[in-house]
Length: 490
Image (cartoon, rainbow, N blue to C red; front, side, top):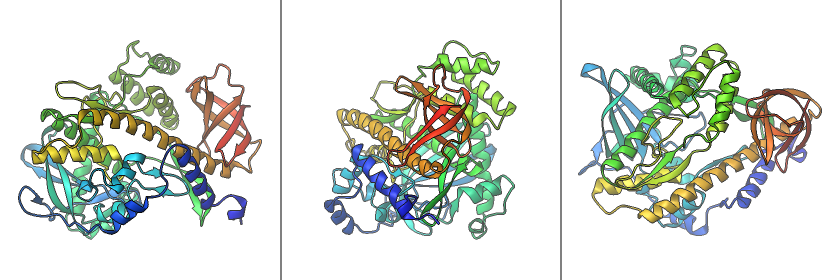
């Protein structure tokens, strides 16, 4: 069997991850000052006095990846008269322990995000915080910020509120098992059965989430589906790359978080408070999207239109569901990256083209993303009637910094993922694969093969190849240390 000496182990990937993180300006370990601060922290169970609501008896549950320990949010539903459903999203009150300008906060400020690599997860906050003290853990009373939404029968959020509360997670659930159950392909998870009434509550949540999703798509939100590959290890040795797909459970959480982030952004806007917005601008390469649609015998308007684009995507998903993830990937590459900007009082920031919403922020993952912690501090200061947590010029600087570090983090994760893929493909030199072009620019042309789902550079035969083109390629070189995978046109 292959072992660490063969360069197939997690330790190799962790070493590569650390090197690449340092090159990109990340801190790979917490400072002695941060660890000293951490050792002095005490567990906070929340409270029940004053403006803090006691919501511990609601049927809160978390749904996340099977191996996730940093639980940022809980959800619960309540049926009301008139086909209205009250959806509450509880977000971990990370600011309760992680105060601004402390040593732990400085680390989070520098990295701005948890970085998930094949060799190791590098959390934004120390694990004692993100997986324990500030995590909404099973059967633990925790302080939270609750986004409270009234959703009507048509999937529109009619009224909303935000307030602090004490909550308790009654069931730690996983996307895989909950998704299979909701889709009718698996049994009711044991953790659901153990809590009376939770199964019905989750079914209600699922129905509301699907309505929210349908309404978003009516407004022009894009129905995109990509293939995410996770490394599969046997012990510490990589054996495969396994594609992950969305299911009803991942959609449930996604739709609730989008709604909660929209409500949060509008709340701060209505209070005349500056906010950190998450936007996706109108795509610069719309002309290429139009060309791709034409290749599928579909005409898009010359001017960017998210509703028209979503109608095209919906039609293609129905016509060819197998090829749809590849079409989605091409469109995503052409849409451009998301970014953080500041919306000031009496101004209107750009919206989110992909989600077809004008008001959007990141607020639901403060254990994992620094912009969410920034927004949480702005929210708490607003709710308390105190001075805002960040000045306008500070927010502008933070928006640019968080955008840059998010881009850097993606590059680290991609490079380590390529190192893992290079490990897997190192014995397949000369093999031929079906592929799709995922990037074409002056700096290079990139393709993704389908099995295993791996991206690499097209170093020969790339003339005339553009995003979305199908072709056959041959593997010509791998470099595990650099994360290089090179193909030539076959």
